Image (cartoon, rainbow, N blue to C red):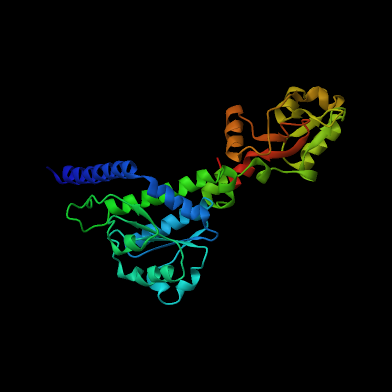
Amino acid sequence: MTGTETFLATARQVVTDEARALDALAASLDESFVRALRLILASKGRIIVSGIGKSGHIGRKIAATLASTGTPAHFVHPAEASHGDLGMVARGDVVLAISNSGEAPELANLLAYTRRFEIPLIGLSSRPDSTLMTQADEHLLIPSLGEACGFGMVPSTSTTLTLAMGDALAIALMKYRDFRLENFREFHPGGKLGARLSKVRDLMHTGEALPTVPAEAPMSDTLLEISRKGFGVVGVTDATGALAGIITDGDLRRHMEGLLSHRAADVMTAAPTTIGPDALAEEAVALMNARKITCLFVVDPDGPRRAMGLLHIHDCLRAGLG
């Protein structure tokens, strides 16, 4: 084989081996997984995740995933735990200790601490007869299938299985707690993900910034309102205060002849496209793109169609959407 063929064959074999290992892990899950979940759900405190080496790197990710999905958690390095960080572990917490072999000496003091102070311990390992698993109150056993390198030295399959077990824990807990999209957003206000989870109400303009005129307003006043608010549009309200229509630059061009002799109701486009305040801003962008418009009035979908706000495409672009 050429170098390229060898590289690709190796890469595909690694992915195939790890995929098979994940299938084996899924098939192996049993009541012990449920008992570990119940132990976590019964705790009053946090999940303390710990591990050394590659298990530690995976442990940090597991702790972060738990914390971002409604299960308070943080990572404690086992070596640092032996030099004062054991004080971060308290009664009411649950410790999730990770070691593929179950014999990592750096975990010894942490394990002893959990036994001394009766802190529940969940062991995650591939060896059921290891020191970690024999001391643990509950067990998360991953299949012992070797590593993808072929000679059992490079943590690969084992770390993939450990990561998957952590994801399974976090998402099972999330679903049990009915952790919803709006809860998820509370922990992810920044970055692209935060932007995608923003709601229309988070970005819309309200109050004095909202451009509206009554249906009977003369076009001279309507043009002043459009100019004053700076969005290039104005909402037209009926006698009840509900949004009856919208006036855009296109409407102005269509009524250019004798424009100032008209009322707002004569010029407006009736029944404009609107959106609710609790819709995702990403949904609003899709709607504006589909309708080829640059802004949406926000109305309460369950009440009188009074204008609550205005969302402009530029607001979404500034938030990182688009």
